[in-house]
Length: 244
Length: 374
Image (cartoon, rainbow over all chains, first blue to last red; front, side):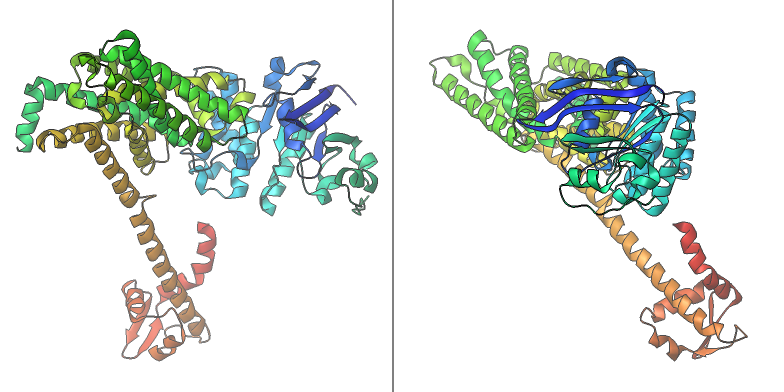
């Protein structure tokens, strides 16, 4: 295994008094496609938001390729939960994807031809080119998710954090998304996905982190995705036997 | 007074011209900025800020003794800003939701403001009269320098919008994402909020603290109905706001000097009502019409499909069938049949019907076509 893409040390985040994630140590090797699994309220989204600096941790540090996150921002792309934005916002699918170029542009500069071309390419990659001028509220849930994915692809990052990209999408979109994720891995990118469907973990991912406020386990799916860890994480006797 | 006479008067009469220009510029600025307030789901923020400005006006008067509107507006600006940032503070630092924080700050500041106003009124001082004009506004007190100030703020606002357009847009749509891209969202946020406060304070003299929030919301809510583009929305909101100012002033000036502020707000509300009903894409009327039309179209298609299934059993598609059979089909109506004849899908002779070549083809393609449209 090569470099460590993301290194998290002693990370603790709390809303008010109750810690949401507690003392997380985590190393994500470069080039893995990793699922973060755990019950509701386990702090999966919080972990990602804390890594990305959206939430301020109480303690702990995060490095990306050995350097603090702030200096490595351009290497990191984020796909938030679909429900976190207002899809009735007056804008088009193309415009949303174009937002992925804003980071490179920096303050004040407007996206030009080059940026627009990149946005169109990303839309095509997720199979949404023909919807580019659609008002975003007129897209289906799966299509909205693909637009979000395209926006992250435009960033052309090395590490992708995705918060439940498979939530509430139809089979077509799920296949499109997982194929893109696998392509990203093939290209040597690191992808971290908050995931809910335990059944598909062995099929989709090669790396997994079990989280329930504390980190339960992290490692290759084939080694640690077993009933023991599932039981520890979900607190009930889990009988999802891993299909080898 | 006729319209032409009135327009002549606007150009010749200094006071009327000043008021018309002032309310127009004010409407444009509040319309533009109101779009942002509406899209951030902070519609009530304007209401809270305008109420929060009242104690600032009273305190500025108490400290300086001056009734110069600019001095009082600085007071309003300061207390409006304090109110706005307290609201943000309350929502980020406590469990309270935004509506609670807004209501709290609104009533606290407004109560304090009214208290100060009554205190001022009880003082044995002839100078106090007129402060209560800030409650409902008094457009007639606008002077040229007020209009210049508004125009300056309007220009500044347009410049800032053009400069930070992309930043504003991404902040409004997806704040967390904007932050991961490296934008200082707190700065953009503060910039928008400050401009909203500035616009509100500018409008206090004209529209007053109580109705000011309508100037912010109504043009934006109306504009949202007509477009799916943020740029067009902001532009339209400015136009609506300015028109509300011009028409409101006209109505108030020609009708026995009705109070200008409330009339402007009412005109803006008429825009909202009109937009809610008549906007082509989101309006209630056209939505209803589209629904009925779609349903009729579907019924027609279903009738054609029903006929197609009957015809299919015969080798010759032009083989006539009794119209009576169609009564078995729920969606069938004489009117529908006539439409199908008009479209040349069906031929009727006497009490018998048959599908035309065209109708047969259309019916056999219906299912596939529905799929394609999807």
